[in-house]
Length: 497
Image (cartoon, rainbow, N blue to C red; front, side, top):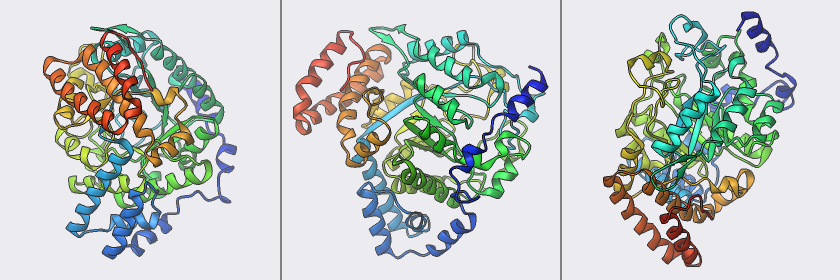
Protein backbone atom coordinates (compact mmCIF):
# COMPACT_ATOMS: atom_id res chain seq x y z
CA UNK A 1 0.00 0.00 0.00
CA UNK A 2 1.32 3.44 -0.92
CA UNK A 3 2.44 5.76 1.89
CA UNK A 4 0.16 8.49 0.50
CA UNK A 5 -2.88 6.21 0.81
CA UNK A 6 -1.98 5.34 4.39
CA UNK A 7 -1.61 9.03 5.27
CA UNK A 8 -4.99 9.83 3.73
CA UNK A 9 -6.60 7.03 5.74
CA UNK A 10 -4.99 8.26 8.96
CA UNK A 11 -6.10 11.85 8.35
CA UNK A 12 -9.76 10.79 8.16
CA UNK A 13 -9.91 8.50 11.21
CA UNK A 14 -10.51 10.87 14.12
CA UNK A 15 -13.92 12.56 14.27
CA UNK A 16 -13.44 15.50 16.66
CA UNK A 17 -17.19 15.98 17.01
CA UNK A 18 -17.36 12.49 18.49
CA UNK A 19 -14.94 13.58 21.21
CA UNK A 20 -16.22 17.06 22.00
CA UNK A 21 -19.80 15.91 22.59
CA UNK A 22 -18.73 14.01 25.73
CA UNK A 23 -16.40 16.61 27.24
CA UNK A 24 -17.04 18.93 30.16
CA UNK A 25 -16.01 22.10 28.38
CA UNK A 26 -12.64 21.03 27.04
CA UNK A 27 -11.88 18.67 29.92
CA UNK A 28 -12.10 14.87 30.00
CA UNK A 29 -13.12 12.90 33.09
CA UNK A 30 -9.54 12.10 34.20
CA UNK A 31 -8.01 14.95 36.21
CA UNK A 32 -4.44 13.95 37.03
CA UNK A 33 -4.10 16.31 39.99
CA UNK A 34 -7.43 15.17 41.38
CA UNK A 35 -6.34 11.53 41.19
CA UNK A 36 -3.12 12.27 43.04
CA UNK A 37 -5.15 14.21 45.61
CA UNK A 38 -7.54 11.30 46.15
CA UNK A 39 -4.64 8.92 46.73
CA UNK A 40 -3.04 11.33 49.21
CA UNK A 41 -6.26 12.08 51.10
CA UNK A 42 -6.85 8.36 51.66
CA UNK A 43 -3.27 7.44 52.50
CA UNK A 44 -3.86 6.14 56.03
CA UNK A 45 -7.35 4.60 56.22
CA UNK A 46 -8.77 3.51 59.55
CA UNK A 47 -9.44 -0.25 59.81
CA UNK A 48 -13.12 0.39 60.53
CA UNK A 49 -13.43 2.39 57.29
CA UNK A 50 -11.68 -0.32 55.31
CA UNK A 51 -14.12 -2.90 56.65
CA UNK A 52 -17.08 -0.66 55.76
CA UNK A 53 -15.74 -0.41 52.21
CA UNK A 54 -15.35 -4.18 52.03
CA UNK A 55 -18.97 -4.62 53.13
CA UNK A 56 -20.10 -2.29 50.35
CA UNK A 57 -18.20 -4.33 47.80
CA UNK A 58 -19.78 -7.53 49.11
CA UNK A 59 -23.13 -5.93 48.27
CA UNK A 60 -21.85 -5.80 44.66
CA UNK A 61 -21.78 -2.01 44.60
CA UNK A 62 -19.15 -0.06 42.68
CA UNK A 63 -16.71 1.71 44.98
CA UNK A 64 -15.96 5.41 44.69
CA UNK A 65 -12.49 6.61 43.74
CA UNK A 66 -11.87 7.62 47.36
CA UNK A 67 -12.95 4.21 48.67
CA UNK A 68 -10.73 2.50 46.11
CA UNK A 69 -7.80 4.71 47.14
CA UNK A 70 -8.31 3.67 50.75
CA UNK A 71 -7.98 0.00 49.78
CA UNK A 72 -4.93 0.76 47.64
CA UNK A 73 -3.25 2.33 50.68
CA UNK A 74 -3.87 -0.56 53.08
CA UNK A 75 -0.56 -1.98 54.32
CA UNK A 76 -1.66 -3.93 57.41
CA UNK A 77 -1.25 -7.64 56.69
CA UNK A 78 -4.39 -8.59 58.55
CA UNK A 79 -6.52 -6.12 56.60
CA UNK A 80 -4.92 -7.19 53.35
CA UNK A 81 -5.91 -10.76 54.10
CA UNK A 82 -9.49 -9.64 54.80
CA UNK A 83 -9.49 -7.86 51.43
CA UNK A 84 -8.30 -11.00 49.64
CA UNK A 85 -10.95 -13.12 51.34
CA UNK A 86 -13.62 -10.57 50.43
CA UNK A 87 -12.44 -10.47 46.80
CA UNK A 88 -12.77 -14.25 46.59
CA UNK A 89 -16.26 -14.04 48.11
CA UNK A 90 -17.33 -11.30 45.68
CA UNK A 91 -16.18 -13.45 42.79
CA UNK A 92 -18.07 -16.45 44.18
CA UNK A 93 -21.30 -14.45 44.66
CA UNK A 94 -21.25 -13.09 41.13
CA UNK A 95 -19.56 -15.86 39.12
CA UNK A 96 -19.66 -18.94 41.38
CA UNK A 97 -16.61 -21.19 40.78
CA UNK A 98 -16.58 -20.78 36.99
CA UNK A 99 -13.56 -19.90 34.89
CA UNK A 100 -14.08 -18.84 31.28
CA UNK A 101 -11.40 -19.67 28.73
CA UNK A 102 -10.63 -18.12 25.36
CA UNK A 103 -7.83 -17.77 22.83
CA UNK A 104 -6.34 -14.68 21.23
CA UNK A 105 -6.20 -14.60 17.45
CA UNK A 106 -3.79 -12.03 16.02
CA UNK A 107 -4.84 -11.15 12.48
CA UNK A 108 -1.99 -8.87 11.47
CA UNK A 109 0.89 -6.74 12.67
CA UNK A 110 0.65 -3.74 10.39
CA UNK A 111 0.28 -0.57 12.46
CA UNK A 112 0.43 3.18 11.80
CA UNK A 113 1.33 3.92 15.43
CA UNK A 114 4.77 4.04 17.03
CA UNK A 115 4.14 3.20 20.70
CA UNK A 116 7.42 3.03 22.58
CA UNK A 117 6.60 -0.27 24.34
CA UNK A 118 5.27 -2.32 21.39
CA UNK A 119 7.04 -4.78 19.12
CA UNK A 120 4.59 -3.97 16.31
CA UNK A 121 5.38 -0.23 16.30
CA UNK A 122 5.82 1.38 12.91
CA UNK A 123 9.43 2.23 13.76
CA UNK A 124 10.22 -1.52 13.74
CA UNK A 125 9.32 -1.90 10.07
CA UNK A 126 12.76 -3.18 9.16
CA UNK A 127 12.73 -5.71 12.00
CA UNK A 128 9.18 -7.11 11.96
CA UNK A 129 7.90 -9.62 9.41
CA UNK A 130 4.75 -7.67 8.45
CA UNK A 131 1.69 -9.65 7.52
CA UNK A 132 -2.11 -9.53 7.56
CA UNK A 133 -4.04 -12.78 7.36
CA UNK A 134 -6.33 -13.39 4.41
CA UNK A 135 -9.90 -14.49 5.06
CA UNK A 136 -8.93 -18.04 4.10
CA UNK A 137 -6.09 -17.93 6.64
CA UNK A 138 -8.44 -16.60 9.32
CA UNK A 139 -10.83 -19.46 8.63
CA UNK A 140 -7.95 -21.92 8.88
CA UNK A 141 -6.81 -20.46 12.21
CA UNK A 142 -10.40 -20.61 13.48
CA UNK A 143 -10.79 -24.23 12.40
CA UNK A 144 -7.75 -25.20 14.46
CA UNK A 145 -8.99 -23.25 17.49
CA UNK A 146 -12.56 -24.57 17.29
CA UNK A 147 -11.98 -28.04 15.90
CA UNK A 148 -8.71 -29.27 17.39
CA UNK A 149 -8.23 -27.25 20.60
CA UNK A 150 -11.87 -26.73 21.51
CA UNK A 151 -12.25 -23.00 22.06
CA UNK A 152 -15.72 -21.46 21.80
CA UNK A 153 -14.72 -17.83 22.17
CA UNK A 154 -11.90 -15.73 20.80
CA UNK A 155 -10.43 -12.31 21.36
CA UNK A 156 -9.44 -11.25 17.87
CA UNK A 157 -6.68 -8.65 17.80
CA UNK A 158 -6.31 -6.08 15.02
CA UNK A 159 -3.64 -3.49 14.35
CA UNK A 160 -4.53 0.06 13.40
CA UNK A 161 -3.88 0.18 9.67
CA UNK A 162 -5.95 0.53 6.47
CA UNK A 163 -5.12 -3.10 5.55
CA UNK A 164 -7.03 -4.22 8.67
CA UNK A 165 -9.71 -1.53 8.76
CA UNK A 166 -13.34 -1.85 9.86
CA UNK A 167 -14.39 -3.61 6.68
CA UNK A 168 -11.65 -6.19 7.21
CA UNK A 169 -12.71 -6.65 10.84
CA UNK A 170 -16.37 -7.14 9.89
CA UNK A 171 -15.53 -9.66 7.17
CA UNK A 172 -13.22 -11.59 9.48
CA UNK A 173 -15.92 -11.82 12.17
CA UNK A 174 -18.36 -13.24 9.63
CA UNK A 175 -15.79 -15.81 8.53
CA UNK A 176 -14.99 -16.86 12.09
CA UNK A 177 -18.65 -17.36 12.94
CA UNK A 178 -19.04 -19.40 9.75
CA UNK A 179 -16.55 -22.06 10.85
CA UNK A 180 -18.05 -25.42 11.86
CA UNK A 181 -15.71 -28.39 12.29
CA UNK A 182 -16.46 -32.05 13.05
CA UNK A 183 -14.96 -33.19 16.35
CA UNK A 184 -14.68 -36.48 18.20
CA UNK A 185 -18.36 -36.66 19.12
CA UNK A 186 -19.97 -33.46 17.86
CA UNK A 187 -18.80 -30.29 16.17
CA UNK A 188 -16.71 -27.28 17.07
CA UNK A 189 -17.47 -23.64 16.37
CA UNK A 190 -16.66 -20.19 17.67
CA UNK A 191 -19.74 -18.77 19.38
CA UNK A 192 -18.38 -15.46 20.68
CA UNK A 193 -15.99 -13.17 18.82
CA UNK A 194 -14.64 -10.47 21.11
CA UNK A 195 -12.47 -7.81 19.51
CA UNK A 196 -9.39 -5.92 20.65
CA UNK A 197 -8.98 -3.10 18.18
CA UNK A 198 -8.24 0.58 17.79
CA UNK A 199 -10.71 3.35 18.65
CA UNK A 200 -13.38 3.76 15.99
CA UNK A 201 -16.11 6.15 14.99
CA UNK A 202 -19.73 5.55 15.92
CA UNK A 203 -20.47 4.69 12.27
CA UNK A 204 -17.75 2.01 12.17
CA UNK A 205 -18.87 0.57 15.49
CA UNK A 206 -22.44 0.25 14.24
CA UNK A 207 -21.07 -1.86 11.38
CA UNK A 208 -19.36 -4.20 13.85
CA UNK A 209 -22.48 -4.37 16.00
CA UNK A 210 -24.46 -5.51 12.98
CA UNK A 211 -22.11 -8.46 12.30
CA UNK A 212 -22.33 -9.67 15.91
CA UNK A 213 -19.27 -8.35 17.69
CA UNK A 214 -18.93 -9.61 21.26
CA UNK A 215 -17.07 -7.47 23.76
CA UNK A 216 -15.22 -4.49 22.26
CA UNK A 217 -11.90 -3.94 24.04
CA UNK A 218 -9.82 -0.79 23.91
CA UNK A 219 -7.14 -0.46 26.56
CA UNK A 220 -6.26 3.09 27.55
CA UNK A 221 -2.73 1.76 28.26
CA UNK A 222 -2.18 4.55 30.82
CA UNK A 223 -4.63 7.09 32.21
CA UNK A 224 -1.91 9.58 33.15
CA UNK A 225 -1.85 12.32 30.51
CA UNK A 226 1.88 12.97 30.71
CA UNK A 227 2.85 9.30 30.57
CA UNK A 228 0.42 8.80 27.69
CA UNK A 229 2.07 11.61 25.68
CA UNK A 230 5.51 10.16 26.39
CA UNK A 231 4.57 6.67 25.19
CA UNK A 232 2.47 7.64 22.16
CA UNK A 233 4.03 10.13 19.71
CA UNK A 234 1.74 13.07 18.99
CA UNK A 235 2.02 12.65 15.22
CA UNK A 236 0.28 9.25 15.37
CA UNK A 237 -3.40 8.31 15.70
CA UNK A 238 -2.81 6.80 19.10
CA UNK A 239 -1.26 10.06 20.26
CA UNK A 240 -4.78 11.47 20.69
CA UNK A 241 -5.57 10.67 24.35
CA UNK A 242 -9.21 11.79 24.23
CA UNK A 243 -10.08 9.87 21.05
CA UNK A 244 -8.97 6.74 22.86
CA UNK A 245 -10.50 7.64 26.24
CA UNK A 246 -13.98 8.01 24.77
CA UNK A 247 -13.87 4.80 22.71
CA UNK A 248 -16.29 3.08 25.05
CA UNK A 249 -18.72 6.01 24.98
CA UNK A 250 -18.92 5.75 21.20
CA UNK A 251 -19.27 1.97 21.32
CA UNK A 252 -22.19 2.07 23.73
CA UNK A 253 -23.82 4.85 21.73
CA UNK A 254 -23.42 2.69 18.62
CA UNK A 255 -25.31 -0.16 20.29
CA UNK A 256 -22.38 -2.43 21.18
CA UNK A 257 -23.61 -4.43 24.17
CA UNK A 258 -20.41 -5.07 26.09
CA UNK A 259 -17.15 -3.14 26.43
CA UNK A 260 -13.83 -4.01 28.01
CA UNK A 261 -11.34 -1.71 29.75
CA UNK A 262 -7.67 -2.27 30.41
CA UNK A 263 -4.37 -0.77 31.47
CA UNK A 264 -0.84 -1.84 30.59
CA UNK A 265 0.63 -1.86 34.07
CA UNK A 266 4.19 -0.61 34.10
CA UNK A 267 3.74 2.55 32.03
CA UNK A 268 2.93 4.61 35.13
CA UNK A 269 2.28 4.22 38.88
CA UNK A 270 -0.16 1.33 39.32
CA UNK A 271 -2.03 3.19 42.07
CA UNK A 272 -2.91 6.00 39.67
CA UNK A 273 -3.98 3.50 37.00
CA UNK A 274 -6.43 1.70 39.29
CA UNK A 275 -8.13 4.99 40.13
CA UNK A 276 -8.27 5.72 36.39
CA UNK A 277 -9.99 2.39 35.74
CA UNK A 278 -12.54 3.02 38.49
CA UNK A 279 -13.26 6.55 37.27
CA UNK A 280 -13.78 5.13 33.78
CA UNK A 281 -16.20 2.51 35.09
CA UNK A 282 -18.13 5.15 37.07
CA UNK A 283 -18.25 7.42 34.01
CA UNK A 284 -19.80 4.66 31.89
CA UNK A 285 -22.26 3.68 34.61
CA UNK A 286 -23.30 7.32 35.03
CA UNK A 287 -23.69 8.10 31.32
CA UNK A 288 -25.00 4.78 30.00
CA UNK A 289 -26.07 2.66 32.97
CA UNK A 290 -23.52 0.02 31.90
CA UNK A 291 -20.08 -0.54 33.37
CA UNK A 292 -17.26 -2.53 31.79
CA UNK A 293 -18.11 -6.13 30.98
CA UNK A 294 -14.45 -6.99 31.53
CA UNK A 295 -11.30 -5.40 32.93
CA UNK A 296 -7.84 -6.55 31.85
CA UNK A 297 -4.63 -5.83 33.74
CA UNK A 298 -1.62 -7.00 31.71
CA UNK A 299 1.87 -6.18 32.92
CA UNK A 300 4.37 -4.85 30.43
CA UNK A 301 6.57 -7.56 28.91
CA UNK A 302 9.78 -7.35 26.85
CA UNK A 303 9.17 -6.50 23.20
CA UNK A 304 11.37 -6.22 20.14
CA UNK A 305 13.53 -3.09 20.03
CA UNK A 306 11.80 -1.54 23.05
CA UNK A 307 14.00 -0.32 25.92
CA UNK A 308 10.83 0.91 27.66
CA UNK A 309 9.51 -2.65 27.78
CA UNK A 310 12.81 -4.25 28.68
CA UNK A 311 13.37 -1.98 31.67
CA UNK A 312 10.07 -0.27 32.65
CA UNK A 313 10.33 2.66 35.05
CA UNK A 314 7.16 1.61 36.87
CA UNK A 315 7.64 -2.15 36.90
CA UNK A 316 4.98 -3.90 38.97
CA UNK A 317 6.19 -6.48 41.49
CA UNK A 318 4.37 -9.78 42.02
CA UNK A 319 3.11 -8.61 45.42
CA UNK A 320 1.75 -5.38 43.96
CA UNK A 321 0.20 -7.31 41.06
CA UNK A 322 -1.73 -9.50 43.48
CA UNK A 323 -2.89 -6.38 45.28
CA UNK A 324 -3.98 -4.81 41.99
CA UNK A 325 -6.21 -7.81 41.25
CA UNK A 326 -7.69 -7.78 44.74
CA UNK A 327 -8.50 -4.06 44.66
CA UNK A 328 -10.02 -4.14 41.17
CA UNK A 329 -12.24 -7.07 42.13
CA UNK A 330 -13.51 -5.16 45.17
CA UNK A 331 -13.81 -1.80 43.38
CA UNK A 332 -15.73 -3.03 40.30
CA UNK A 333 -17.33 -6.14 41.79
CA UNK A 334 -19.58 -7.09 38.86
CA UNK A 335 -16.94 -7.06 36.13
CA UNK A 336 -15.23 -10.01 34.52
CA UNK A 337 -11.49 -10.00 35.21
CA UNK A 338 -9.03 -11.29 32.63
CA UNK A 339 -5.53 -12.58 33.33
CA UNK A 340 -3.59 -13.61 30.25
CA UNK A 341 -0.74 -15.88 29.26
CA UNK A 342 1.64 -12.94 29.66
CA UNK A 343 1.80 -14.19 33.25
CA UNK A 344 3.46 -17.39 34.41
CA UNK A 345 1.47 -20.51 35.18
CA UNK A 346 2.32 -20.04 38.86
CA UNK A 347 0.97 -16.49 38.94
CA UNK A 348 -2.18 -17.39 37.06
CA UNK A 349 -2.80 -20.27 39.44
CA UNK A 350 -2.39 -18.01 42.47
CA UNK A 351 -4.78 -15.34 41.19
CA UNK A 352 -7.75 -17.63 40.62
CA UNK A 353 -8.73 -17.18 44.25
CA UNK A 354 -8.42 -13.39 44.07
CA UNK A 355 -11.27 -12.70 41.69
CA UNK A 356 -10.04 -13.67 38.23
CA UNK A 357 -12.82 -15.03 36.00
CA UNK A 358 -11.28 -15.40 32.52
CA UNK A 359 -8.01 -16.60 31.06
CA UNK A 360 -6.56 -17.78 27.76
CA UNK A 361 -4.88 -21.10 27.02
CA UNK A 362 -3.08 -22.82 24.13
CA UNK A 363 -2.08 -19.26 23.36
CA UNK A 364 -0.03 -18.29 20.34
CA UNK A 365 0.39 -14.67 19.35
CA UNK A 366 2.40 -15.02 16.16
CA UNK A 367 0.50 -14.14 12.99
CA UNK A 368 -0.80 -17.43 11.59
CA UNK A 369 0.77 -19.35 14.47
CA UNK A 370 -2.08 -21.80 15.16
CA UNK A 371 -2.19 -23.37 11.72
CA UNK A 372 1.51 -23.12 10.90
CA UNK A 373 4.54 -24.85 12.37
CA UNK A 374 5.46 -22.86 15.48
CA UNK A 375 9.16 -22.18 15.92
CA UNK A 376 11.55 -19.39 16.84
CA UNK A 377 10.81 -17.65 13.57
CA UNK A 378 7.37 -16.81 14.93
CA UNK A 379 8.94 -14.33 17.32
CA UNK A 380 9.39 -11.97 14.39
CA UNK A 381 5.59 -11.82 14.22
CA UNK A 382 4.91 -11.51 17.97
CA UNK A 383 4.00 -8.38 19.91
CA UNK A 384 5.61 -9.55 23.18
CA UNK A 385 6.87 -12.70 24.95
CA UNK A 386 4.43 -15.11 26.60
CA UNK A 387 4.82 -16.42 30.15
CA UNK A 388 2.51 -19.48 29.98
CA UNK A 389 2.25 -21.60 26.84
CA UNK A 390 0.41 -24.60 28.31
CA UNK A 391 -2.34 -26.28 26.29
CA UNK A 392 -6.03 -25.78 26.97
CA UNK A 393 -6.22 -29.42 28.06
CA UNK A 394 -3.47 -28.93 30.66
CA UNK A 395 -5.01 -25.71 31.97
CA UNK A 396 -8.48 -27.24 32.27
CA UNK A 397 -7.11 -30.28 34.07
CA UNK A 398 -5.46 -27.99 36.61
CA UNK A 399 -8.68 -25.98 37.05
CA UNK A 400 -10.62 -29.20 37.62
CA UNK A 401 -8.15 -30.49 40.19
CA UNK A 402 -8.54 -27.14 42.00
CA UNK A 403 -12.34 -27.49 42.02
CA UNK A 404 -13.13 -24.96 39.26
CA UNK A 405 -15.44 -25.68 36.35
CA UNK A 406 -14.40 -24.37 32.95
CA UNK A 407 -17.30 -22.67 31.23
CA UNK A 408 -17.63 -22.35 27.47
CA UNK A 409 -21.05 -20.77 27.78
CA UNK A 410 -22.03 -18.00 25.39
CA UNK A 411 -25.79 -18.37 25.83
CA UNK A 412 -26.35 -15.08 27.63
CA UNK A 413 -25.25 -13.13 24.59
CA UNK A 414 -27.73 -14.93 22.36
CA UNK A 415 -30.56 -14.71 24.90
CA UNK A 416 -30.27 -10.96 25.34
CA UNK A 417 -28.56 -11.12 28.72
CA UNK A 418 -26.11 -8.39 27.74
CA UNK A 419 -25.52 -4.69 28.32
CA UNK A 420 -27.67 -3.10 31.03
CA UNK A 421 -29.57 -6.36 31.53
CA UNK A 422 -26.43 -8.34 32.36
CA UNK A 423 -25.29 -5.62 34.75
CA UNK A 424 -28.43 -6.01 36.84
CA UNK A 425 -28.26 -9.80 36.74
CA UNK A 426 -24.62 -9.79 37.80
CA UNK A 427 -25.17 -7.36 40.65
CA UNK A 428 -28.09 -9.41 41.97
CA UNK A 429 -26.35 -12.75 41.53
CA UNK A 430 -29.14 -14.04 39.29
CA UNK A 431 -26.93 -14.48 36.23
CA UNK A 432 -24.94 -17.05 38.17
CA UNK A 433 -27.90 -19.45 38.09
CA UNK A 434 -28.02 -19.57 34.31
CA UNK A 435 -24.25 -19.64 34.06
CA UNK A 436 -23.93 -22.56 36.45
CA UNK A 437 -26.35 -24.63 34.37
CA UNK A 438 -24.76 -23.69 31.08
CA UNK A 439 -21.26 -24.25 32.42
CA UNK A 440 -22.16 -27.87 33.15
CA UNK A 441 -23.56 -28.39 29.66
CA UNK A 442 -20.72 -26.72 27.76
CA UNK A 443 -18.06 -28.40 29.89
CA UNK A 444 -19.66 -31.78 29.11
CA UNK A 445 -19.43 -30.88 25.42
CA UNK A 446 -15.75 -30.03 25.67
CA UNK A 447 -14.85 -33.10 27.70
CA UNK A 448 -16.53 -35.41 25.20
CA UNK A 449 -15.01 -33.69 22.17
CA UNK A 450 -11.49 -32.74 23.23
CA UNK A 451 -10.32 -33.90 26.67
CA UNK A 452 -7.44 -36.29 27.26
CA UNK A 453 -8.24 -39.30 29.45
CA UNK A 454 -6.60 -37.69 32.49
CA UNK A 455 -8.45 -34.42 32.03
CA UNK A 456 -11.73 -36.25 31.41
CA UNK A 457 -11.46 -38.01 34.76
CA UNK A 458 -10.68 -34.78 36.60
CA UNK A 459 -13.44 -32.88 34.79
CA UNK A 460 -16.13 -35.46 35.46
CA UNK A 461 -15.53 -35.20 39.19
CA UNK A 462 -16.21 -31.46 38.97
CA UNK A 463 -19.37 -32.02 36.90
CA UNK A 464 -20.71 -34.54 39.42
CA UNK A 465 -20.27 -32.01 42.19
CA UNK A 466 -21.92 -29.24 40.15
CA UNK A 467 -24.95 -31.40 39.29
CA UNK A 468 -25.42 -32.25 42.98
CA UNK A 469 -25.38 -28.53 43.78
CA UNK A 470 -28.02 -27.81 41.13
CA UNK A 471 -30.26 -30.53 42.58
CA UNK A 472 -29.86 -29.01 46.05
CA UNK A 473 -29.88 -25.28 45.29
CA UNK A 474 -31.76 -24.99 41.97
CA UNK A 475 -34.25 -27.88 42.07
CA UNK A 476 -36.64 -26.20 39.61
CA UNK A 477 -33.99 -26.52 36.89
CA UNK A 478 -32.70 -29.97 37.77
CA UNK A 479 -34.99 -32.08 35.57
CA UNK A 480 -34.37 -30.01 32.43
CA UNK A 481 -30.63 -29.91 33.14
CA UNK A 482 -30.49 -33.71 33.30
CA UNK A 483 -32.47 -33.95 30.05
CA UNK A 484 -30.14 -31.57 28.22
CA UNK A 485 -27.12 -33.25 29.75
CA UNK A 486 -28.10 -36.69 28.46
CA UNK A 487 -28.82 -35.30 25.00
CA UNK A 488 -25.35 -33.72 24.89
CA UNK A 489 -23.74 -37.00 25.90
CA UNK A 490 -25.46 -38.53 22.85
CA UNK A 491 -23.90 -35.95 20.54
CA UNK A 492 -26.26 -32.97 20.49
CA UNK A 493 -24.57 -29.60 20.89
CA UNK A 494 -25.32 -26.01 21.89
CA UNK A 495 -28.20 -26.65 24.29
CA UNK A 496 -28.55 -23.88 26.85
CA UNK A 497 -30.74 -22.11 29.37
